Length: 222
Length: 222
DNA sequence: AAATTGAATATTGTCGACAATTGACACTTG
DNA sequence: CAAGTGTCAATTGTCGACAATATTCAATTT
Image 1 (tube, rainbow over the protein chains, first blue to last red):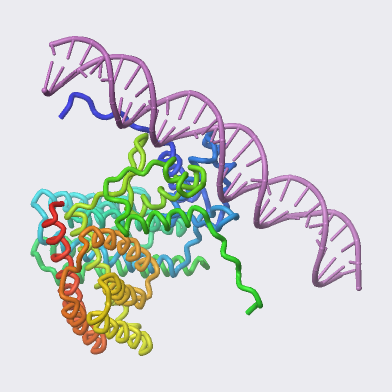
Image 2 (cartoon, rainbow over the protein chains, first blue to last red):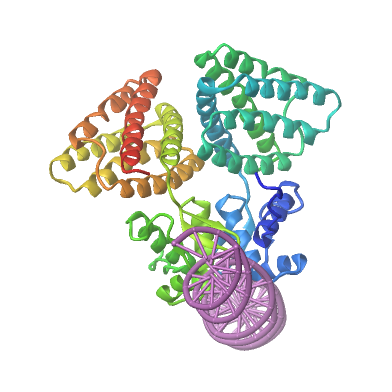
């Protein structure tokens, strides 16, 4: 390893994309809202070109939609979309966990255990945002330990959409203590190398989240 | 229904992206090859702007990679990449099939049956390209019948990469008759609504494909 | 000869401009 | 007054240009 670390190449497109993502997942930009290139480029102090490229990037991630000659709009999530996203998440995460079962190291398991413990802490004294982020981190770690880079990339894309959906709902979908506890069967099955139990645990765990999210979203009248 | 159908809005970016995809999956553009914007824009007779946007689109699909200030390159697939892609495909397709099991109609099952029969026909008298496409269509139909739009989109993205990998290998990875036959257990399990058998059949079927593809690819010295 | 340096060339990142298209709104017309 | 038409401002699609950066390659040094 060299003496110096690579300097941050501040890619303008990347920066713009990041900011728009944040604005959407924070709820500052509302679903269906029009994103005119000129307005955005003025806010960022750039020309329209990098904004357009950033928007295309976001379009491929499903965060915004475009129709030719009409421009870009923040994607409107329906309850069907949310159901699909969580449903897909179930399938991917079960598969990742299945892969992780065969290759997880003690150190990695320890990291998962620690992350689960963090959930208990945050259930006592954390903000909703922190709880959601910690929960997400647990599941992302599980996917990462599956060792499939392509899967992790898809999972991250899904996560952005999930976050947008949850922000839209605006409240936690269950008691945080209960959420923390439901991670135990997952860890247990992982430790015992029990594939069937692991699958069951994840299917149940995420299935509950899916049902709650869809329900809350539908109740809001979406 | 009106008298006229909507005129094709020939989106330039879309057209360019399509052409580049074809060139890559056909093997005209080789892995690692540099894609300079000026050269492409000259070939297409456009300016660089739409070319850049098309390349970003392809980047998000994983077909090309870019590094800042250095430009775009056709993605170089490693055998690890191919393993990851097929591994992920196993997980997604099992999940899609699981969903399809619960909701598939007789008509849809008939379409799958017909597609499987087509594989036998093509094993006798079809080109390799036709066989691969027919096989792919069968599996894509299975995913579609799962009813999850988001999953189908991810699957399609994966398919583009799979096709690029197969083109790179340049030959079929197994006896076409054998390939056709291995679809029977899938159809059987689907008809009998046997989730476990369906999962097993798919895992085996795609697992064989994964192993063969990775093996051929590694043998080529990649 | 191998490695290093430096100038020349090629390429990207970004910009401002212009034509084509869309959507809104006032205006005509029956 | 409803329906349709024409006009105008706003916005997108595309382009060519320029500065910043990367790559190439010949000259130089070790």
